[in-house]
Amino acid sequence: MVYFLSDVHLGYGQRSESRQREQLLIELLEAIAPTAEQLFIVGDLFDYWFEYRTVIPREFFRTLAALDQLVRQGVVVEYLVGNHDFGHRDFFERELGIHIHWNDLERNIAGKRFYIAHGDGKVAGDWGYLLLRGVLRNRLTNTLYRWIHPDIGIALASLSSHTSRHYTSARDDGMQDSLFDFARAKICTDGFDVVVLGHRHRSALVHVSDGSRQGTYVNLGDWMSQPLVGVFTGERMLLEPVEKILADGTAQA
Image 1 (cartoon, rainbow, N blue to C red):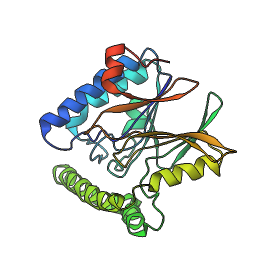
Image 2: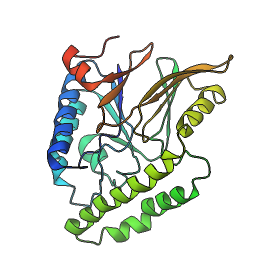
Image 3: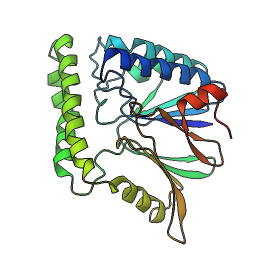
Image 4: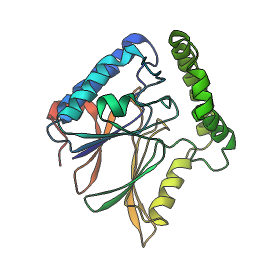
């Protein structure tokens, strides 16, 4: 089976709440290990992530250890960065064997064409956000930022994530169908069978058809309101509550 998750936002909110989400994530990774062929992290696993050449945020150690164990068990993990966790260097690839992607993914899985993206920057005409993202991801910007002491730099990264949340939330509240329209075009015009997105914090599993083309749009929601995981059984897409998977032991094909 192939699993998809996004918008866990570890580090957001009260420390106790973040730890609860982290523990649930760790239990999920342990539960899916026997059946998972692949896991796609579709952005914003962390509410902020910024790594230096020799320093990473220590509060996420348990999650990193769980991901390392999953990879050691033979599961291929691909990580598509979101708008909150863009401060990657090479730690995930070199130390964990997890592939980091900066752009949207197109994959053929069991004969189905998948389009996988975090979802930020997909609203037509959202030039302000695209400009902000370009500045934050700029190599020169990040190189200069890494001259700041890590204790200060990581704190500023956390503050930046709150600014990003405020801006994108304000935009999305007025664009309720923006990502659905994007997904429908990918299915009906570009010929994808499944479109998997996150970012909006509103889960969805929708059959899309225009008469000649049909497919499935999945939005993975967020883990603050309801922890969900997308599951592709090889034949169909499911969007399952994490608690259900833990109770059942695995997703039901």
